[in-house]
Each structure stands twice: as C-alpha cells, then as structure tokens.
Image 1 (spheres, helix red, strand yellow):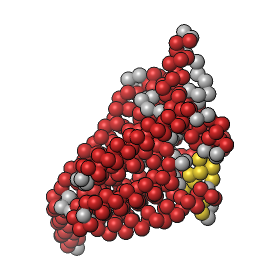
Image 2: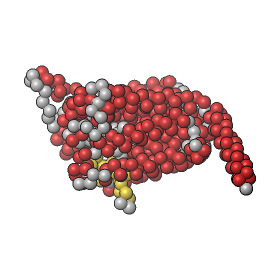
Image 3: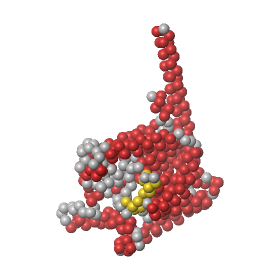
Image 4: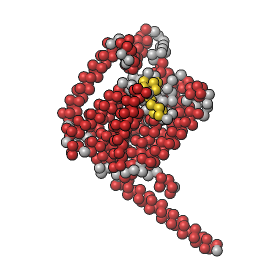
Length: 417
C-alpha cells in the first residue's frame, strides 16, 4: 500500500477511471480483434501488441504526472515539430484508406496529427494564460494563426479531427473570455464556410475531386449522403432493409447494438466483430454494447462524463491559469472524441473515424491519450492545495506506519534474543 501511495500520486478518481478504461480496453480489443487474428494467423499477437502499448502508456502517465504543470509548457515546441512532420507526411507518408496520416521513422509508424493536437492544446492554454500581458486582441490573433495552420494541414486527410480540434480551441477561447466580438465574427465565418463547403461537396461531381487529387472529398460526400439520404431511400423502396457497400459499417453496428439488449452476450461472444472492418477501433463501442449490453455502454459513457466533471473540479481548484486551461483542454479533447465515437456507433452522426480514447486499439493515439491523463493528474497533484495537503497526509501516515512496524520488529527480535 505504501508503494502504491508513493507511485500513484494525484487525483484518485482520475486514476480509477484510467484503470477501468484500460481494463475494458484489454477485454474488448481482445474480443474484437478476430479479423486481425485471422489475417495474421496469430491468436495472441493483436492483444499482446495492444497491452504493450497500454503498459507503455501507463509509464507515460507516471512520467508526465511527476512534472509540475509549469514545466509542461515546453510541449509548445512540439507544435512546429508536428507541423513539419505533417508536411513531410504529405510527401512521404503511408496512405491508408486514401489518407496520408502515418509517417514511418526507423520502422516505427505514428500519426503526427496526434502530436499536433496535443501541442495545439498546450499552445492555446499558454496563450490564454498570458492574455493580460499580450492583450486579448494579440492573444486571439496568435491563437488563430497556430490553429488555422494546424487544422488546415489536418483538414485534407482528416476532416473530423480538424473540425473537432477547431471546436475545442473555440470553446477554450470562450472559457478564456476572449472578447465576444472576435468570437462572434469567427462563429459567423465558420458557419458561412461550412455552408459553402457542404454545397461544394454536394454539387461538384465526384470525378472532378478525383481529377484534382482530392479523393477524400469523395469519401466525405458519400458519408454525408449515407447518413442523410440512402438509408431512408432503401427503407421506402423495399419492405426489407438492404445492407450495401454504402451502409455496411453502420448497419452491422446497429445489428451489434440490437444483439446486446440489456446485459449483452458477454465478452468473447460478439458476432458482428467478424463483419465490422474496424470493430477494434472506430466501432468498438458497438462491440462493447453487444457484449456488455446497454448497461455496459452506459457505464463506459459515465466513465467519460465523470472524467469531464472531475477534471472541471480539478481545474476549478487550480490556483494558476495555465494549469486550469491545460486540464480543461485535455478533458475536452478526450471527452469530445469519445462522444464522437459513440455517436457514430449509434448512428447519430456520419462516420468520422474517431477512436474511443484509451479503449480503441491504437499506437500513437493511445500514448497521446495517456499524456492527457498525465497532464490532468499532474495538475491535480501539484496545483491543487487540497490535493497536495491530502497527499502529504497520506505519505506522513505511511511513514508513521513504517516506523511503527520497524519498532515492533525490533521489539520482537529483542524478545527472541
């Protein structure tokens, strides 16, 4: 117990959520990786890889949460580095499903966009903490420069991530009390751009996008059409629903959710894991509901909601501005991404390709998610007066118990002698 208290510092609720998500991840990824098992003819390979990433991620959490928040501002320097790596990925990156998101260095593949998301959150948090020194106008200008460059590069290959990241920055600026006139104008520009973008997608022929090497635009168009039109058309034309190439993923996700009912089929008994192409990643929430039922799905949802609420409490207790925004930004990106993944699984929004943080199978995304948890824990540990006092009390109690134990052992040894 003493060892645990010395190693796992910071907010106990956040640690509990982290461990529960890791446990759910190991169970469900092991169950949902059947297609990978068939492909590589290796029963244990997928789960060993995933568990290894989670163990390394736990080490990342322990490392990051040992640094006082003021030192975490050094992560700002990751922004230009990640921007450079994303540009290199455009030229030398590996193309998967028509998107150049992965870069391989020394045989290790990773997504520079995940680094960029982390760096941008730290960058925006740092600028908001300096709002009075820079003036709100300069702060807004510098935030927009970094955000537009980062989101603009991500936009071409990962529309959903770009939109989500921009929305989180907008929320951070709103919480940081950037003048409403700036946020209002920005909001109107976003709405105008969004309308024009959708109209462009709908009315420009798909062949034109392919000709100018914007194949991802065709994917975006098809996903929007699938969500808004094609399912309804099939239902009207025929008395039976038809599963086609266009609605394949969403249809099998719905079947998985329907199979789960209240308490699920229990882990390892999923049927749709063999049909969903990304059962262990983009659609793992559907597999969770199929195996653990609506009850399991609600529990996972509540874990992320509690994470968000607890992070808000930690941010409110923080005495400095920079750590406040670090915690808010980290929790926003984790919970927003989780809600997006769940919404896709239950067909509330079009398919986005967002993994479920810490639960979905992944490499770069898992490690970066652990950095976010480490940041939240670091702030709860070093910038929370009540937390610091409680931690000191726990360590003091542990030292007292150790002294008493040593004293009793000495007496016992003396008596035997």
